[in-house]
Length: 270
Image 1 (cartoon, rainbow, N blue to C red):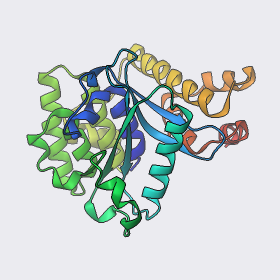
Image 2: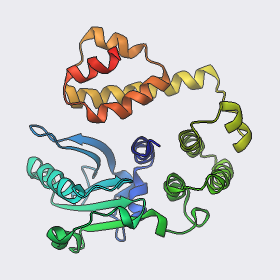
Image 3: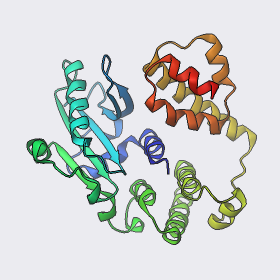
Image 4: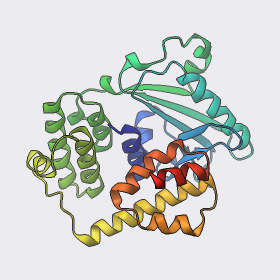
């Protein structure tokens, strides 16, 4: 399941969601801007950076990392990226806070001794999704996070139906779209008709809505590509304009591993 893509969309759509996991969110939490940031001249790329508004009293930058696989190098990489980012932007920001989101506590790096001062400093919060309780007892945004972590098919369907009903009552179309996306990823072996019946949804979209989604996704992908590989030649732009929504979503996930224009060209050829 492509959780990185889902969490990117979650934070992009609802940047304030991260601060529901923080004990003391900044006063300007709702105005923070979420970005995926590449630190130049290195191989580091920070997928979750929450940038404060220019008029914030305290220029505190928040870093987020979502982890659903065991990686004993996680803390080495996370703190290296974090401090390198602060080094490159030392003039603008005067404080930082890190949030590490694990699907399960067992996914933490085995040995955290070397990073204990940072992990226990009060500037880092570790969140374990499986310990947050029933998704039905959480705000909609956190409920979506927990839905990505559900392993039981029955519980996933029941949770999705609950979130869909809540989203309909609150007229939250973005939540409905994300619930649907999560279930489509979780049940990739099922047909559109089977998923429709399971959730009580009609997944067919009017052409105008689909085209609007394609254009929005295309803009996000182009911004990311410009940041990662630089200015895009016209002939490649033409190819990008011809990609479907499904292809754009696949590219938005693949580009997280790009480091040059050659990587983009290779992906397009494939």
